[in-house]
Amino acid sequence: MYVPTGAYNLTVSQPGYFAYSSAVAVSDGSTSTINITLELSHVPVPEFQPNFTLIVMILTLGAALVIRRRSLKRTKR
Image 1 (cartoon, rainbow, N blue to C red):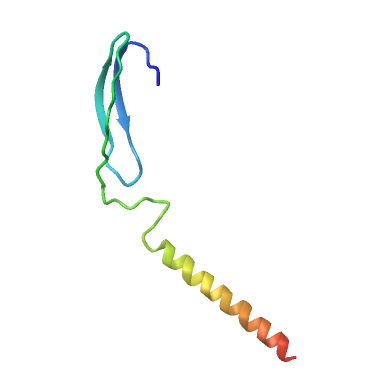
Image 2: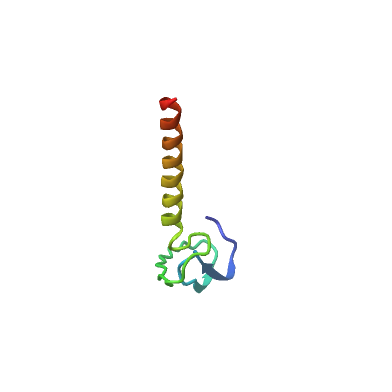
């Protein structure tokens, strides 16, 4: 990407990881590559609680069993 000449503070963040910040100086006609590795923070991401998948699976299985039971009752009539 093109960035005008100047001094910048680069910050990269992602839920569940520690943020990375670095001072970057850009001069005329220069090119740079910045490699970033984010470190896991081991803090749960609010949108994806650890037990959320399990709860969804249990509710899905329960709904499937109710639907199956109702269809069996209808075929017996």
